Image (cartoon, rainbow, N blue to C red):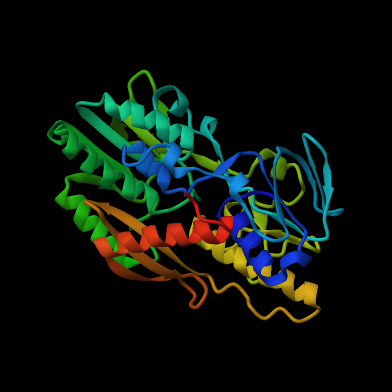
Length: 374
């Protein structure tokens, strides 16, 4: 099992529950700890410390599962062999869940004059930059598509507003949001309408159907795809996403991502699965979808292990929590497979959904790590 994010942890937990001591699963990740992607916003806006949102993989206690903190150096999908800096592993079943990396250099000027906040280190740097920010224009801009967690840019703009209000400097600041969609959350008109209403009420400029192609560091302007320019004093960018280099070199990739059977998550190689952000499964790149894909892949693996037909295909459904600020969170339940177009149901932002999000985090940690998180 390559990668210990949402998908990797969920598939390990599911297989452990279904197969137990008969399972021999090695979970490999180059990092020492896990964090929920949305916790980067908590750190960025000073709501939680970096230490408090990270959970060491040493705490994993699941029957049949062992964790190895190693860096993967090669993947052979034909032989189902994986090499790391310390050794080689051969597998009957190989699951690739290494997520998406960021290519900062793909957007000229981003590293020189802007900030990305999708990596944990980037979020920490933005936190420090915000502490000193008193006035000026802030641009939150998407630089490429697809990108992880489609609601995140909208959440960032709203939480920026809340943060600046709390510091008493909002009246001195302008916030602009640049996204490649007509609506902030295209599958859910209700959630999009609520976001647009909130943007208007909080004086956030919404720039739809556009991406930031480059940053002019000398003039401090964001250059949009249609030639327009947005001046900024602080630029927060969602960088171009790509597969990790080791995945790119594996032969698994076609058209930038790993193609999979959207029902089972199987790749074109027998016994090799891909789940989560690294895969092209026809759904957004988000933690909730990665976990649902993982459960589907696990069921396929168990069916093969038990010599029976696989009958639990991925249904393309998932949920996204959306932060609106002021302690309120909305939820969009979306469905990508039932119809020829994606649909979504909106649940209005409330403190009760915020608590639902917190409860789900605690339940997930307990399920994935197999012991209470203290």
